[in-house]
Amino acid sequence: MSYPQYGPEGHQYPAPAGPTYAAPPPAGNQLPVTTLVLGVVCLLLLVLAGTGLGLYVNERRRHNATEALLRDRDAAITETERRATDLDARLKNTEDQLSEVTGERDALLPCMRRAQEIFDALRRDDDDDLGTALEMAITACAEAEDAVDS
Image 1 (cartoon, helix red, strand yellow):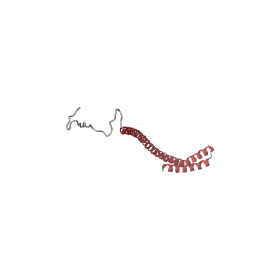
Image 2: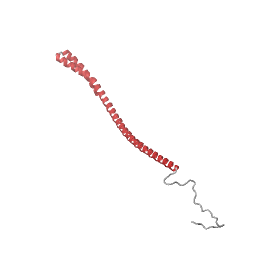
Image 3: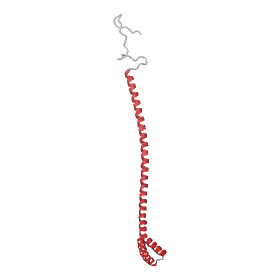
Image 4: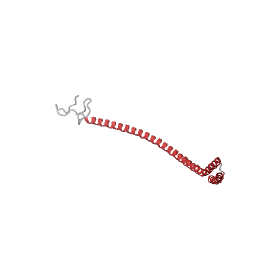
């Protein structure tokens, strides 16, 4: 392109300069080193973020599973405690009944022994022992009846 000439003949002014660059523009597919480093750092941050998210999701899943397991165990413990309380009450009731039956047995035992003495006297055909055994049996059985009825 030619520019009109102003000024003295034969003098040429320099052509207007285009934009100036501090560094030459990249040629072809070449990337500047800073862009490459920034890309690698971004990629590493992305990988770390993905790994962190994966670890968080995995730990959250394990946490939820552990909570569910603990809830099930708490329910089982509560049920076991309830059953243990019921069994304790039944045991106490059974012990009370056993104590009562044992007391009645102990009260009736002298009466039964005196009745056995009556049968022994009858078998031996001993009237003296029979009379004594009857008197003792009447007394022992009256005491047993009082003890059982009270």
